[in-house]
Image (spheres, rainbow, N blue to C red):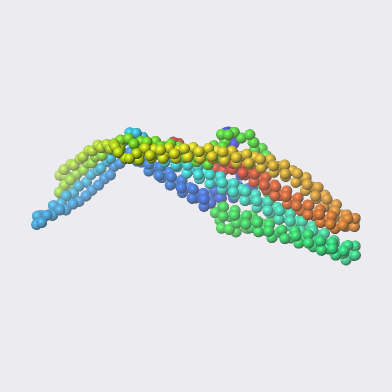
Length: 429
C-alpha cells in the first residue's frame, strides 16, 4: 500500500474537512480513559520484556557481613567479610531466548491493542458527532415545519371565521401542528445525550460541550461529508493495517516462542557461579590484612523422571499455538466481512440519498402548490395536510440518510484499520 494512503488512513477524519470533528478526535485520543488504560498496559508489557532481557546476562551482587561469636566464658570473636557473588546460566538450548521472544511478542500485541482502542475510539467519536449534526439538522427541519404549519393554521382560522371552511379544518391543522411539535422534545433529548457521549469520550464531564456544540445555529452546522474519491479496490494487504489482525499475528509469535521454551525445559540446564571476597577479624584490617576468599562452582541439572510433565507442557503450548492460529483466521475473516459490509452500506445509502433528495424537491413543490390552491379555495384541507406530512418525512429522511452515509465512510475507515500510527519504540523481534 502506498505511503500516502497509509497516512490518509491514519488521520482519516481530516478528509471530512470539519475542524470540530478533528479537534474532538484528537482530544479523545489524548484524554480518553480507555486509551490511558491501554497505554499503561503497554508500558507494563515493555517493562516485563526488559526484565526478561536482563535475565539473559550474568548477575553480580555485592554483599558485606559482620559476625560476633562467643562460647561459654571464652573471649568473643569478630568476623568481617565483604565480596561479590556472580552467577550465569548459559542459554544452551534457547529456553531463555524463547522467553524473551514471547515477552517481546506480548509487548507488540499490547501496542497493537492500544492501536485497536484508538481505532475504535476515533470511529466512535466520529459516528457520535455525525449523529449529533444529523439530529441538529432534523431539529431545525422540525422547527421550520412547525413554523410553516403555524402559518397554515392561522390561514385556516381566518377562513373559518369568514365561513369559508368548517371547524374541522381548524382542528386538523391544530392536530398536525401539535404532532410536529411533539417531535421537538425527543430530538432535543437525543441531541443532549449525544453531547454527553462526546464529552465522556473526550475525557470530559457530561455537559462540557453543551455551550460549544449544543447551540443550534441558523442554519445548523451541516453533517460532515467525506469525499467520494476513496478507492474501493482495496488490496488485501491493507487489512494488515488493522490492529486486531496485528494482535492476532503477535499472539501466534508468542505462542511459537512458548512452544520452544517448553521444549527447551526438557533438556539439561547449566549454571556457573562464583564468589570473591575478603575476610578479616577486625574492621580495620579488611582493606589491608584480610584473607582473600574465592569460590567457583559449575553445575548441571538434568530432568530424569517427571512423570511426563515436561512433555505435557509442550503439548499444552502446541495446543495454545493452534488456538492462536485459528484465532488469526477468524480475525481476518471478520476484517473482510467488516470491509464488505461497509462497502455495501455505502452503495445502498448513496442510492437511497439520491432518490430521497429527488423526492424532497417534488414534495416541496407539492406543498407550495397545495397551500396556494387551498388559499384560493380550490382544494380541501386534507390535501394540504398530506403534502406537509410528506415534505416533513422526506426532509427528515434525507438528513437521516446523509448522516448514515457519512457514518458508513467512518465504518469503512475503521474496517481498514485507520486511525492510528505505529509506535516506533517497539523493537522488531
